Structures are given as C-alpha cells and as structure tokens.
Image (cartoon, rainbow, N blue to C red):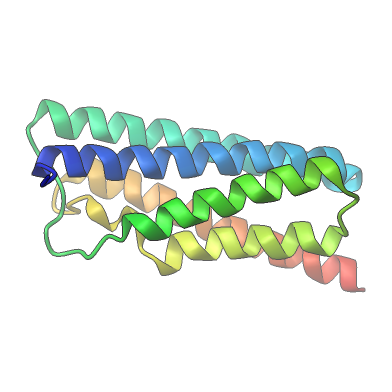
Length: 158
C-alpha cells in the first residue's frame, strides 16, 4: 500500500519528534550516572525537549498551511528509526549496568552527529520563513551540543 504524501510527511515529523524525546530521556539518565556533570546533561535534555516542541509547532504550521515535505531531499526514515532503536537500547543498558563515563560522551556525540550528518531537519522547505528560523535554531543548538560534549570529553582526558 502506497503511503500518501501527507501521511509520509506526518510520519517523518513524528519520527523526528520521537528521536528528540528519546534523546531527552537518555540525557536525563546520563545526568543520574554522571553526577559531576549532571547539570550539563539536564541542560541538553531540556534543549532536546524544546527541539521536539519546535518540531511539533512547525508540523502544526505546515499542516495548517497545507505545506508538506521538501521534495528535493532524500529523507531516510529507516535511519531515524535505527537511531531511535539504538537510543532505546542505550537507555536499557544504562539502567542495568555500570557504564563508563566515556561511553556516555561517545554515544551522545554519535547521536548528535547523526542529526547533522543525516540532515534530519532538511525535510522542511527552508524557503518558508518560520521553517528557516526554527531549523536554524535546531541546527545551531545541535552543533552547540556537539561542541559542549567534546569540551567535556577533553576535560575528562586531562
């Protein structure tokens, strides 16, 4: 059965929102495991929650205006699903075992980099001002997460 264009767009956005919500959950768990940097993890978790709400708002605006996917992009839903599955496995592992702090930072870098590398937000047409503004914030904050995580890794290595 063929997925209708609007249904595909809705599914894509829901996956992106779920990915952000799962990252929030993971980073809240990391805050419990890395007590010396718990505020760092809680701050990033709060931004992931903000990202999910921004995506919801953007989806609502697109739906209201009957705007949908940027057709010039090759969005791979399977990549996002795999990322969500991996985040869920990380959550389960962290709840069961003592995890080295390096693992927390390595996995966080992997997740944040995957958002940028896979251009997950590119499904929105950036010729629309609201989308351009929100996507800019999402990209900038994700890049900031990467820099903050790297900074903390470097601190740990000293």
